[in-house]
Length: 385
Image 1 (cartoon, rainbow, N blue to C red):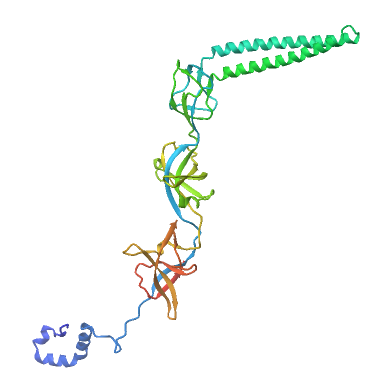
Image 2 (tube, rainbow, N blue to C red; image 1 turned 45 degrees about the vertical axis):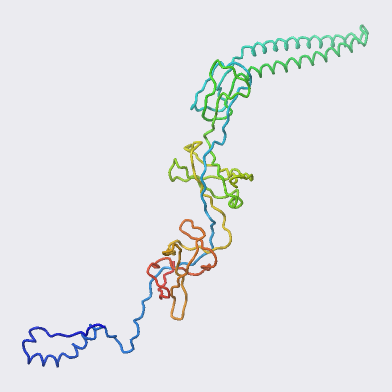
């Protein structure tokens, strides 16, 4: 129980007894007022609490979420085209024109084989073609001559037919000779290995003087103008990704710079051990900064699912147990008041948060500014956003 308060007169009044008594009678109301104030007496006879002032807050309505969940997967960048080149003919390597790390253009000669024997075979085929062409011309002359003589009945009809048959044989022989010459020319051409596409030589696997055969890798070529990102997607996510899904790629080597990407392929063949599916993304890299082998992560936006309310992120209040709550506006006879509700977060994006269930109904007003010091049931002075 608190000790009673005492009102002591100033020292100069205590030294004058007469004055003290007169002053005590004249100053009694003031002393009583000081006693009441110092001892915490109620300011009115009824003892009612003072009116709680309305808190000025900013509110905004909850709206149906126009975005779905966003999740992240990591993978490795690979070249869109990568191949090991082998010679198109058996032979001795005469010269290798490139080395590892050299950039090459499509059609550029990378390696040459010794084509001396093939060139000799080509010369022989060309000579045979000329011989067949000459025989064809002679057969044509004999047929023309026979047709002129038959008009005068100078030769039998069977001779004319024989010359016509010989002409057909000469034509076939000439066509065969020309085909053989083209084949030998192609054999000579195949002693040269061109680049099938533009890229960078990744490996040099052969040197001059080495005997190689068709199917033997001699060079490794990688296209670097466009890369792709291969991801392993869990089975529960794979069916949610559409071909036109919005995707952003972040390469670790480029820091936080986002790159646009598109879905290149969805391979519906699962990995039995991991229960994942292959998702191949084509990454737009106009500056050519990405290289095969780099690590990267992709942010994939899923389409909106079932209708869920979306609110401003600033409306959320974190509880000590890690859960979240917010204040909604409730209209009462005395005016709007704040009501606290616990909510569950589905996903968030760009400052908005989608909530689960019926925690907040679309159109319901939510406090987004001034909610830090609110109490449940506190009157509100609303500012609409």
